[in-house]
Image 1 (cartoon, helix red, strand yellow):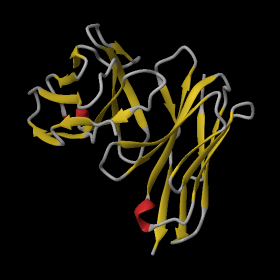
Image 2 (tube, one colour; image 1 turned 90 degrees about the vertical axis):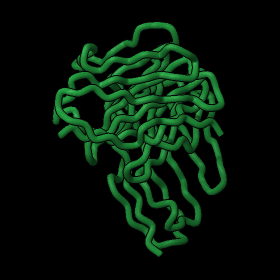
Image 3 (cartoon, helix red, strand yellow; image 1 turned 135 degrees about the vertical axis):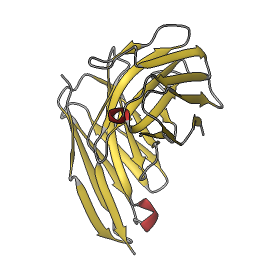
Image 4 (cartoon, helix red, strand yellow; image 1 turned 120 degrees about the horizontal axis):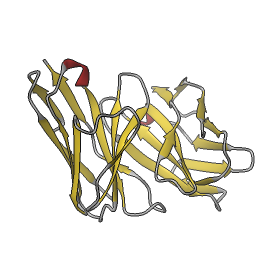
Length: 112
Length: 115
C-alpha cells in the first residue's frame, strides 16, 4: 500500500528565504506526482505535475524534482513571499490506478 | 488554466434534510471526477470516483445510499447528502481531470453544517 510522507509538518521562514519541502513515497511504481497548495477554507490548487519519466518541472519561483527510484520529491520555493503561506501537499498516482494518494501536507508560514 | 466550479461554497441545513452540491468543469471535459471529504486540520479523504455515464465507485466505509453521486455529463457531477445528520458536517471538495496525464483540478469546496 502506497504511503506518502511530508516533512516537515510545519515550517516558518522569513520573507525572501529559499526553502525546500520534502515528500517521500514507499512504492516507486508511480505514474506521476503532483504538488498542490491549499489555502485555509479553500480547495487545492495544482502547482506542478511531474510524470514518472521526468526529473523536474518548473513554474515561476517553484521547482519540483522527482527521484522515483529513491521515492522522493522536493518542492523548491525561491525568494519566498508572505503570499506563499499555505499548506503544500504532494500526491502520487499509482500506475494502473485513478486514485491519488496524498501526504498530510506541510504548513508553510512566510513572515514579512 | 482549467477551472472547476463548486457550489454552494457553504450550506447550513437541518438534520434529516438533503443537500445537493454541484461540481462543474468550466473549460475542459471531465472524464473522471472525485469527491473528497476533509476534516479540520486533516488531509483529504477520498469518498468516491465517478466516470461520466457510469455509476460511482465508492471507497470502503462510505455509504452509497447516503452520499448519492451523479455524473450525468462530461462537465457536471453532483453529490447529494441524503437525510443529513450533524456528523455529516464537514468540508466537501470535488476534483476533476480529463485524463490521468493531466493535473487534477479542484473546486473551492463546500462547507456543510448540519444543525
